[in-house]
Amino acid sequence: MKNIKVEKVTLNIGCGDDNDKIEKAVKLLEILTGKKPVITKSKRRSTFGIPKDKPLATMVTLRGEEAVEFLKRALAAIENKLKSSQFDKLGNFSFGIKEYIDIPGVRYSHDVGMLGFDISVTVQRPGYRIKERRIQERKISAKDRVNKEEAVEWMKKTFGVEISE
Image (cartoon, rainbow, N blue to C red):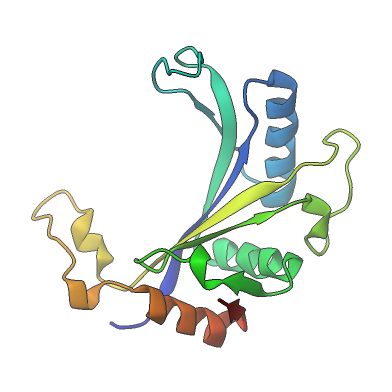
């Protein structure tokens, strides 16, 4: 029950209010993952002058074995190096890729151009389902949660990642 695993890998491309860039980002995420991306919209009118329901970004979530396989390829693009500051207190981590052609096996597409994206990885242990179930929902105790140090050691051991300060 103490084993750590990847719950999900989320890819996100922020585009601002440029509709052309959003279309390119959707194409890129379809090429990379084979899944249909979701276009995220602004939630409410903000102080930045962005109207409600305006498309701002696109994202796709990978789970299971395909999430692990994509994570391995993405880590190869950043040469298997992460900073300890990229991990949060619950062991989740994020990193960015400046150009999608850095990922091994991905070729340049003229339709897309050059785009970068962010990758967020959520980790969990077996038994985390109790906090999301409908009936008798419970909290995860502090000793059963993944912490930053455990996640760093797990990344070193499982994926061979170098962690720098």
